[in-house]
Amino acid sequence: MGAGGVTTRPPRGADDLPRGRAEALLGWFEPRQRDLPWRRTRDPWAVLVSEVMLQQTQVPRVVPKYEAFLERFPTVDLCADAPLADVIGLWAGLGYNRRAVNLHRCAVEVGASMTGAFPESLDGLLELPGIGPYTARAVLAFAYERDVGVVDTNVGRVLARWEGRSLATAEAQARADAAVPAGEGWRWNQAMFDLGSAVCSKRSPSCDSCPVKGWCRWADGGGANPDPAVGSAGVSGSQSRFEGSDRQGRGRLVNMLRRSGEVSSTALGEAAGWPGDPARAFRVAESLVADGLAAWTEAGDLTLP
Image 1 (cartoon, helix red, strand yellow):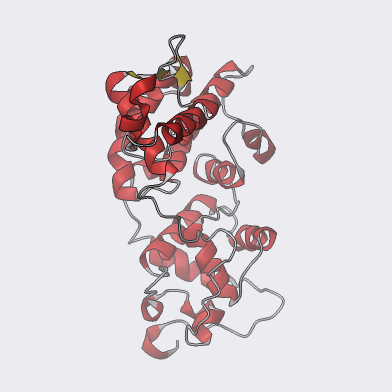
Image 2 (cartoon, rainbow, N blue to C red):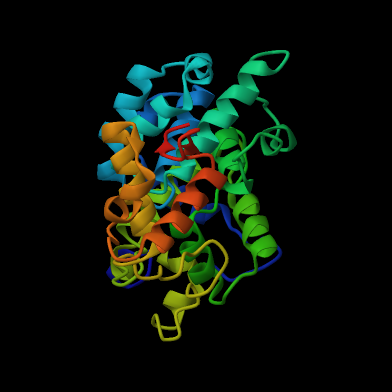
């Protein structure tokens, strides 16, 4: 044991990802794991809904939306059979509304398949609309309990700090996959999420209380700058300013459509928050139509699809 009761990493040999680290992390996780509703299911539909909602949205905001969404659409077939407008309506408050469109398209694709069930392979999941490498691996790990690494921004940060350097995408994924103890895909990935969220945080990591400090090269160096997590694969960077952006205008238009069903072409500027710039509002409305979030009526007004 090292100072402060933290396990000291043994000398590195052929096994670059020692069993001791897995035992330490899983032992730490077991009594501390967060009780989240999507952790109580292995239904791939429910897992997918949670993962799509959690992209760029904080957990406290997602929990009530997740529960309400699954109350309305408990199965993939019910979502597939519903109008897209209903799905967009339930997405209010989550932001990044295009995710609702992708989720609905995925439900339609699964419902139209020969089996009517989710694929159970990485390649099969990647063929579904709106599902990328991260989401596909999340479904494999959390619905089917496969031994694959799931690299979100928290996990990407942990991996880079463990290695003491920035990691390219393929290398980060390879490291994540190799770190999963056999038969522990579900627990390991959830533990990595909680470690990155509660201990190995972006701005104020609690290295002294980290259960795997003994296997962290960055901690070995005293957590010196530059932080290897900055710019590493899977680690999100700073977002562009929201206030006054096109994203804000898009959100305003979608929210107005949720409330009223339609926005007159002459009211687009006011609805988007730019009464003096109707040309910008029209351009943003066109982007919503291109993304499947809205449609034009024969009269030239904007409506939900």
